[in-house]
Amino acid sequence: MAKLSSVNKNERRKKLVLQYAAKFEKLRAIANDAKADDTDRLMARLKMAELPRNANPTRIRNRCELTGRSRAYYRKFRLSRIMLREMGNKGLIPGLTKSSW
Image (cartoon, rainbow, N blue to C red; front, top):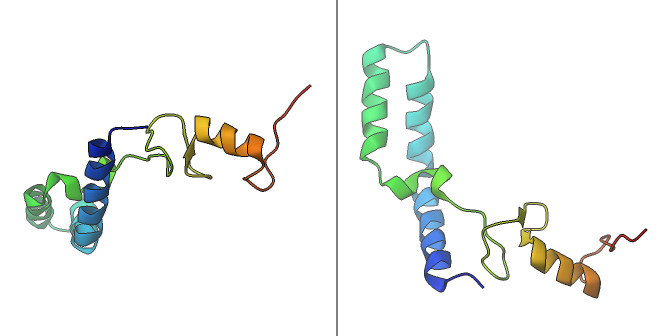
């Protein structure tokens, strides 16, 4: 199980990203628009820099829903490899079977 503080920190980041999502996307569109004036692009980048660091979506870490483990994460199931194997062996994930040969 991951440290509770790490999981809580990630949850706070998710909330902050949702709070600033519209503003961040608007500024990013202006900053990446090649047709826009250079001063406008620069001003958009400066405004993006003023936003909180944790408002950037890349700061969010994918974590297992059950344990909070951050490594060996399967996006499709939103679980770590360990919990995926345990739940698969118990038959709790439909369509997932343990392979053997």
